[in-house]
Image 1 (tube, helix red, strand yellow):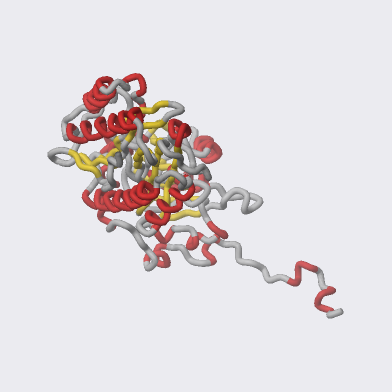
Image 2: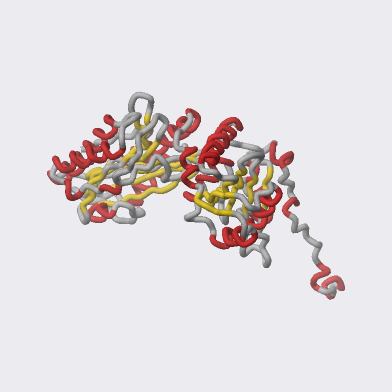
Length: 417
């Protein structure tokens, strides 16, 4: 036996470099790899808008929380950072440069974890719990930054407070007992609700990607084709135009009245109602769109329900413009449902929702909302008829409020009957 294998086990290994900067992530190292959908001036404009709202709400700093998927929109909008796992917090003081801290770190290497996609120079990595025995928390970095800025006694707003990881928030609160923590989401969402021309261009591209998926599924929706086959066609059409597919819900037959279901192996039958709901993610922005149709021979009730959904959508789209109240548009949709004989199946809480880097944000379109539409608002419009055990009549598009009216950002057919 070779003598070297008789040595103590630990001596067979090189001492490993466990530091975060084993591959440098300082700004000078990151800058050459920087890749963003917008120029830096766009993000500077966003910070200026947020700070205007902070002044109105007497906030000294914001803690902007992000988590994977649909919970990363607020962080992405201000920083362009992608939270792939774990948690991220961007600290935005009322003055000076922001800081980003995250435990969304692959292999203890920030440079393998999307930090090269953020313009924020001050990035402070933490360990992801479960990857090391005694993780360094992101709360520690937040506290250190606030102390450096003399904000230990500050009025601090929390953005995304409903989803803020409890251990992170508790760590921050316990170490800053004199700070006052309040909701900052209202101020933040108000600053981001009017989309800029650059944002609208990105969202229009995302709308075209989603429309491609809808068209592919609608073309294939015939008796004998499975829901999974429709999903595959939609994915293939969308994948070449988007970062990733956000969701693809397909339900047919009696199940279509349940709306949001993942596709199954069930094959469409003649006369089936079919519900399609799809969305992509592109350069930080989400889409949420829907179409309803009938496979094969269409019956009287199917036709009426589908036509009612289309009539509501088109009437609201034609009436929407700056200065119009959302409640008036809701009343318009409901009146059409009532006159069509389907008033009892009108779904008031399904009228629509603002959309952008979050799948639901301002403008607020909840039932009897006080929102007055403004140019630059973008929202998913989806007035709907839902009949449990039968199906739905609903068209959903992203709608942009222009200076003179409204237009769809989802160029897919609406009527297939």
